[in-house]
Length: 391
Image 1 (tube, rainbow, N blue to C red):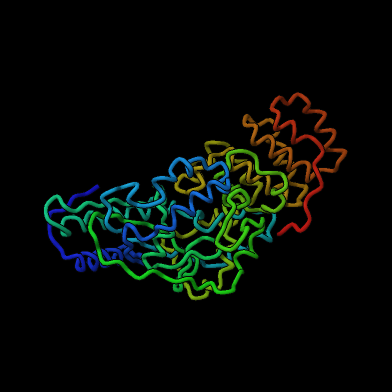
Image 2: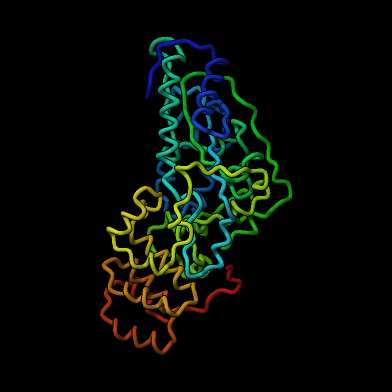
């Protein structure tokens, strides 16, 4: 938190914040009043009551603070909401046809955006506070997707865009590709006009979802979302959803990439946000051979690192099981003795998909000493896979 010592009128303070944000390369900006989203809290509580948050226990734990900015910081007067365009230079869905390669979500192909945006916000705050108000009267806090703040409803209230039917923010200028950040202040700054919904009758994002994670427009069931399954879920991916995951090993861009408003978005990948070539379409065989040290080294600056090697290999092995490439059975088989049961279980499932039944049965007999109950369950004959599997 920073405290200021200068003086600017509310209008001049707003203009100065916008000027600083433009200097830092932000593509969208607007001011939301602290009380601008009274409807967000009840919707959040209903969503949690339905269990749609899955095992993200931090959601109910922080729900009371998340419902309104003032619940987190009583002195807040307004929020500067900022958007940074990360539009990709190619359709991220093209990799889904290359079943022996892993699909990593666009936002995670380069450096961790949290660190990049946090640095920008801190620089804005450090320059704004000394000029913004009388000595000791101006305070600010910065947020980048790590505090109980409902960024998307606030961004809509600030005029950056609207929450589309896929529940993500959509901008008429940047489509569905915006990183969000916020600077909260105790100043009451002139707010911007709320953006209205421009989705109309379009349901492209809903129809694009491989796992039918949208029970209705503007509603998402995280328990069926591939981003949740490959990032937030700590345990095994449910069997019935594994075939639908395809080769997506970290996140999913399908609903974002399907948005027609993307055609109005210019490319926005900064140099530090640019995808690393090794993360655009990495071979699954290569990823399956990463030990803990190699995993940490490869993803040292990437959001991928936060899920850890075990969950990452779980995802890679599910993708291997979906590849249809028998040669990858060797890479799955090397993990039958992995120290982590999550990895062993995913390896078993992959082999059940790649090996002939007789060969898999012989392998099961050879591993009858498995003690983990969930891994033992994976060795049982697999149920019939659901129809309508998406690519």
